[in-house]
Image (cartoon, rainbow, N blue to C red; front, side):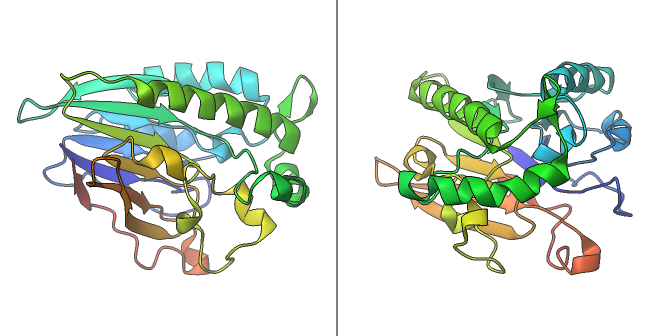
Length: 257
């Protein structure tokens, strides 16, 4: 299957017009499209099916639980397939059946192990204030994020343990990154990096391809699988052009699985 991957377009502030990639069979949106949600309408008449995993900024200034309900309704109106802790099995042009496994996969702050969790959660307080999301009238803080992150992780483990011989490949789509290898080189191994990456390296090998966003930089690297083959991890985030983050963004790049 030929996949176009976009994320972190931040169309609430960025002057950018997404365009379909010639030859694509599916558009995957890996989150942080538009914190106002206005730009979702741009994908309504996209020529290929659109699969979407929400990013953290889709919840800016909103009650998280209510936002999930409203965001799903919005996506349905625009014919966008919102996937959260859900599986989709799609058939490509060659008749191959591809399993897509999608979840935001919030950060659990254990990127540097349990010993580094407290520092990572303190560093996350800054990002949570900026996000301004709530749950039940209170700030959606690092502790609440961790609860959701652990639920996402548990679901991913269960789903990736499921095998079906009729599936020809498995693609995981998350917003948050699955490995420290996806860290932004501008910031490195700081406690705040645990707000962007998870230590899901042990899960990567259960996929053929893992797509993510959140980091405003590009990645394409391989990880070993149990059978000796390699899984591939790709991020094609655009980020903010004013900060030079979009310099090597590839808007119509195709990935094959």
